[in-house]
Amino acid sequence: MAERQVVFVVASRDYQPIEYQVSKHLIEQAGFTVLTASDTPGTATATDGSTTHVDLLIDAFDPTDYDAIVFIGGSGALEHLDNKKSYDVLKKAYDEKIIVAAICLSTRILAKSGILKGKKATGWNEDKELEAIYKEYGVNHKLSDVVVDGKIITAVGPAAAREFAENIISLLSDKYSK
Image (cartoon, rainbow, N blue to C red; front, side):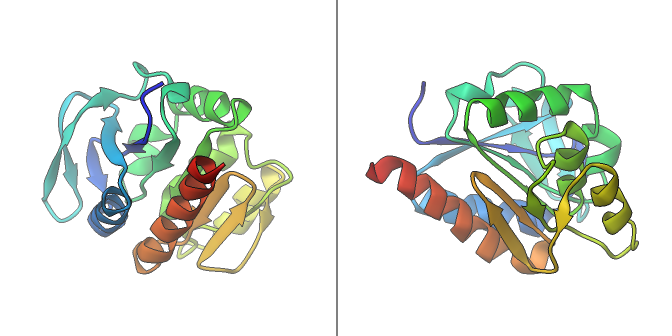
């Protein structure tokens, strides 16, 4: 296992740039290498037109080789990442007790993968559909900017990106302080 590495998973189109940039910057400042995975190779494009290099494909890496798997939201998350490939990565990471985090719309992907069943979580809910989705998948919806339940961290969106990253760093730090 490569130590001190985190994978951020972004949609190839329309990922949320603030969630990605703020979280990535803070986690790198804490001494971790951040690699970016996506559903297509090459370059991923954010909702604001900015881009990032894709290091890994979602279906071509083993989550157990990393310290945390972080799903970034944005309008493209459900179109590009809400699928079996993502669910498989999430289930394997969860089963192997890897830190799993998701922000904004991507928390719905965690719910649909099954790993949030019986867990507390939050997420983007401007469309007022989150409560029904969480209920369907057995998730205990909490009205909070960031929720930590064991090794799972969820957050509502860009305004919570700093707190989201700080909670990821805290869990990562706990892992390395033992």
